[in-house]
Image (tube, rainbow over all chains, first blue to last red; front, side, top):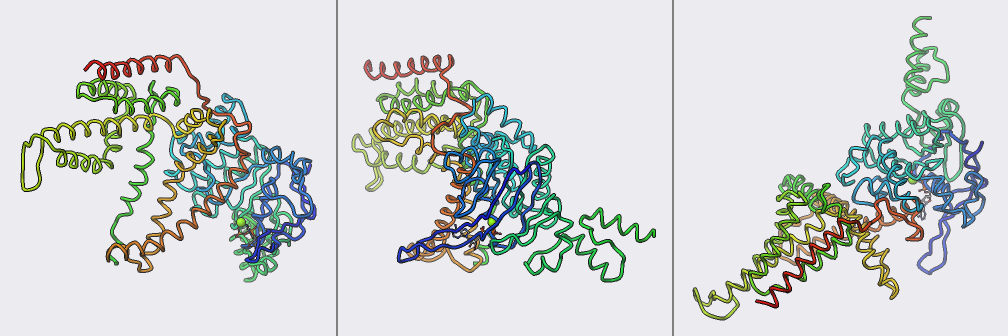
Length: 283
Length: 281
Ligand SMILES: Nc1ncnc2c1ncn2[C@@H]1O[C@H](COP(=O)(O)OP(=O)(O)OP(=O)(O)O)[C@@H](O)[C@H]1O
Ligand SMILES: [Mg+2]
């Protein structure tokens, strides 16, 4: 079942120039797709391709200029739906610093549920569960600014999880982290997905996108490619034309193929590459 | 200039940033920590008022005993209290000096135009005790109350004034965010200073005007990043369903419990003692 349905979405940022006349910058130029319930969808695309704008359209932070976004059947452009939509689709942003509201970790995780008007005892339970879920239970009384980037991002994820959404949209959550923080955040996102959470994961790292069940490639405000990671990453040349890379194992496999090693076309992960190489040697 | 690049003050800034927030709240589980923030805020305010009611040294006995009691019960280590006092020592010293040398009366000691009088010594000692108690008293409030409790308490105490248009919730939310972002902005400032120094900016020499002018390239980027942070934070708060105080609940809802009643009674005894000594002595 489709959890998110986007139909002919166009989005213009409106600014006023010096004369006071409104100027529109088109950030999204007619995009349609669906996100299945329980799926892990990755969105990739170069800077300025409209990924963040798209993300903000998925929970009513931005409302389509034209076209429609439905979340679990709710139209985001209907004012009455906005709280429901934001409760169903939580967001984790790129900069871990600028999305933490409170000076103490557990108070921050409680912020979302508090806004939803949930009973104090229930908030307490949710906060503890969410913090344990990201393995930050020991830090609940700490000040966020004393934590590492990866830890802060885990707090932000706990804050989203505590709202008990059905979907979390991650907007480049790993862009400002070191490799270790990146691995942790990706592992948590995949873990949440295994437990039934619908995940939309925007990223610059192709290795992260390779973990998804579905990949959307954006450029210039449009969707240029869409499919499974296997389908997308075998189209190396097309991705190059959009200034995008392929995951390292894919690149290595294609170099080996050029050197005459008989490798199958659909290698995506390190594991698949190793298996294929072993087969070549054996056979 | 290269020397200022490698001045090794990285750690000092980090430590300062750490101190600023850690100095505010000492995680604990004492009765004092558990008291209703509204009670603690009112008590701290009235304690300060009481310090100004005292007119004789004997009056401070009650104030010192009461504060000592609070410190012992709260189990806050002395070095945290000392840390709160340290930054204001200069102000205290200055006040003392002014009082010591400026007040006229029976001269005890003279050197040129400088003189110390009996009245001066008395006033200086009086002011010193008052200031120290005032600072320790108010830092006991922040040391034993979580930032959220503090702002929720202030919001609750200000809410009667909502009728005359005071935006109590908004003010409290601003305080919450300020407490959270002071360290972030300090780090940001530090980053900007380092970036400017790496480009050869000099903040350490020249007269006061030159130095003030050197601050402009720090302040401009700082403002820009403050606005960027504010914008991103507002977005993140909206994404987490923040919409003012419409139906907000609290994880740690404030509750006036039995222990609060006991605390109020004890505090009233203290206030009565202060008033009595003022009236009787
Ligand atoms: N607040 C804004 N006002 C005006 N134009 C904007 C605003 N935010 C983004 N844009 C423009 O919209 C387009 C898409 O931006 P968007 O932030 O969605 O891209 P992105 O794919 O998220 O990029 P990045 O990888 O850098 O995060 C860009 O051309 C950008 O300049
Ligand atoms: Mg973006």
